[in-house]
Amino acid sequence: MLKTDSPPAHLAKYWSLLTADQKSWLAKAVAFADAITLDETKRSDSENTFRRDLFEAACKEGLGALPFPTTYGGSGGDYLSFVLVNEEFARRCVPIMSSLGVHVLCQEPVYKHGTEEQKKKYLTPSAGGQYLAAFGLTEPNAGSDTAAIATTAKLAGNEYILNGTKTFITSGASADYFIVMARLLNEDGSKEGSAGITSFIVDKNFKGFQIGQKFDMLGMRGYSTCEIVFSDCRVPKENILGAPGDGRKVALGSLAKGRVTIAAQATGWAQGALDAALKVVATDKRSENSGQLDYLIGSLVLMVESARALTYQAARSIDSGESDVTLAAMAKIQATDAAMKVSTEAISLAQERGLEPDLLIERIFRDAKAGQIYEGTNQIQRMLIARSLLK
Ligand SMILES: Cc1cc2nc3c(=O)[nH]c(=O)nc-3n(C[C@H](O)[C@H](O)[C@H](O)COP(=O)(O)OP(=O)(O)OC[C@H]3O[C@@H](n4cnc5c(N)ncnc54)[C@H](O)[C@@H]3O)c2cc1C
Image (cartoon, rainbow, N blue to C red):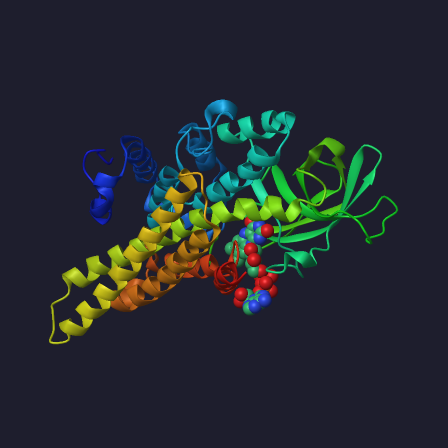
């Protein structure tokens, strides 16, 4: 258990800058991670199983809606506190980390664009852990290019009828509701002049909703990642989220914050891999090559600290009310690239031990690759930064 008056070594440089509240959220994350055994952590990865019980326990600790006001059950914390929790969970490979991040990502559009009824119906049980949320944007032929979304929605009386497939949906097979982006057609089924991409809240028990193929991936295992399929899925009219045609605005607004969460997770991965490798290096005899080794370790430490600095800055920009999309993109790139590079080098530093599951370095190495891809690939994020300057 972390004492809120004594910093963990990797956060010493930041300690005086954190508020008492931020330190106490971090202490909660440390205590939560301490209670999970290494065996449990390894099992969720090797067996590819989602720990719903841990998710519910985290929500009971106030982590399920940490950065939202208390009105609908949120904890009233700031985004930097949520970042600290995510960093700690990733550093320790806490099995629910990614689902919790997506869960909070999904509450953002309901909080921002939802009706009062939607907020009452979805936010309060999400905060308490009765509901788990998932985000349905990507399709087999529409990833980076959201304009290519082919899932359709058509108004028929008091319902929207949805048809299509979403893929790589984190928590997909375990979630209770989904934020789904679909192309709203005219009532006669035609596309021309229609409103375009629109967001909906889809419950798992709506008629025509199905779980599709489940994925057995290299990394990010244990998060119920799968396809979800809509076959004439009947969504009540009141479950449209925001205005018709506002779907990309709804999705991208949430992802701008979500990328800071990913940056926090990747910073934690990089720190976790580095710490584990350094423990092994510390037990080795120093040879005449130690200068080269020091150079490498110094470079890796620099990458982790740069990732952390950008991530905290991006979180502070959210907390100041001036969320900066390019800063979020920079933090996401820097941190996920750091996690990939640091975990790769950490395997070399720890030599054959680096490939053993117990050190968690190889797990982080596998997870970090996904971090460079999801919530907007790092290539696309670089283009977004350039375009924000050139527009
Ligand atoms: C573990 C995991 C979990 C995920 N969870 C979710 C989820 O919960 N919900 C969800 O909706 N999605 C999720 N995704 C999907 C993820 O967001 C997409 O994979 C991602 O947006 C990229 O889309 P894509 O795979 O279709 O690749 P594409 O967009 O086809 O890109 C393929 C490659 O081409 C590059 N590229 C594409 N367009 C351009 C361009 N114009 N210029 C230069 N390069 C370009 C990309 O950077 C990438 O390297 C998840 C993915 C993974 C791996």
